Image (cartoon, rainbow, N blue to C red; front, side, top):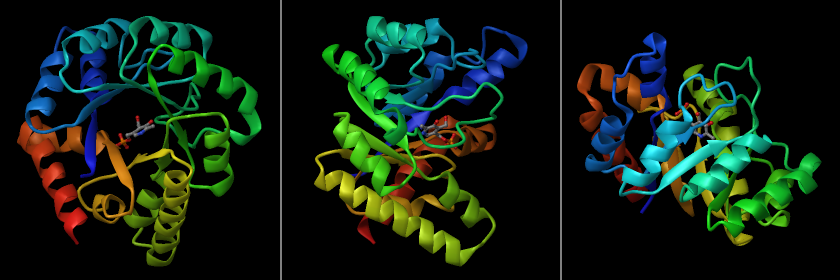
Length: 245
Ligand code: PXP
């Protein structure tokens, strides 16, 4: 069964827009949980633009489903993760000016640094994932640095889908399929995410060996109209349907 991890960063984006006490992040996470989310994901950015340290600590204590912390390799963030001990951590590249995570982590060029962070997190019992582009070289490097999982970046796939560029969409999905299969054959858990929505998730959910899809923006955007629970349930339904096809 392909699992759905709901990224609730943008509930915090809304709260931080007014630096108010609402919408309540834990309430949002619990609504996702009750609607069938298999995990909750948050990104503690170095600039703290949405998720705050206290949010992560609270979710870690109160959630029933696993908490997946997206994080950079900055030393203070690594120390925070070691102290908070989320069930999972996904290491992502981070640039201050970006609107969202733009590219995958270049594991191949930074093996020694990433290997050390992976080892420290794993020694605290955290399952470690690396957010990488769907490239053979990056998957092999993820295995070399002893990560537990890879999360393949579906951003390029999603933008070709949005542009209705069928040729490049097909090429991207093949890249994700090939990289995912390789990951599974190397003993890595195969996750994917970024830019997935109600129209483009199906083909990704149907890929062999897919473990978890991490989806945020589209679910929170839909929730503006439907509420969180129907938005999460609809995404779960769509994933289940794609698995069967
Ligand atoms: N996975 C990773 C590693 C991400 O950085 C993000 C964005 O925070 C997502 C998944 C979710 O992307 P989206 O919000 O576009 O669904």
